Image 1 (tube, rainbow, N blue to C red):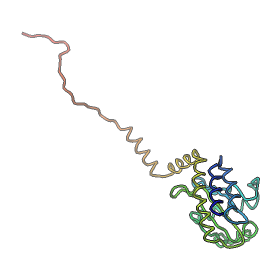
Image 2: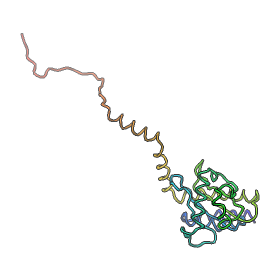
Image 3: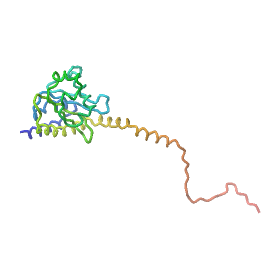
Length: 212
């Protein structure tokens, strides 16, 4: 049954029409594979000052970005991303965040959290899924989520190709060596270049005069 559910969910992912639809699908229909109490689908744009943004929450039809839970979660996600915790699949514990934030962990999240990034290519991460519940995660469940994440990452990239290309160009021009090369090229174009050629010629007088 698990294999059938995985195949069915993958087909739903491929049929998604946009990133929002895909986000809602992953945040809710992943229950077909594993049991959880709470899921957050997070988009990741490394070119932005605040790279982590929640796109969908399980069992929530309309996402309120001003809700305390959403604000707290995005703050925690940005902290964990800066600490390079979210770059690979892992179990996230409350001890990984500042102590003054830990009091809200029980309010907004459950004790056992499984994080799985949606990685497109290597090492580009386009999104991630945060799954939380009261009981520990099993190895078999983690493997299922990782297999699902591979399909979801490909679909995510296909559904927003223009944004992805724009982000890659922006990241490229933020590198110092790129601007150094551009300046060097412009300076080289300003240098005068002498032109010459080699060919057989015949010298003929313009106004010849014969002297005897």
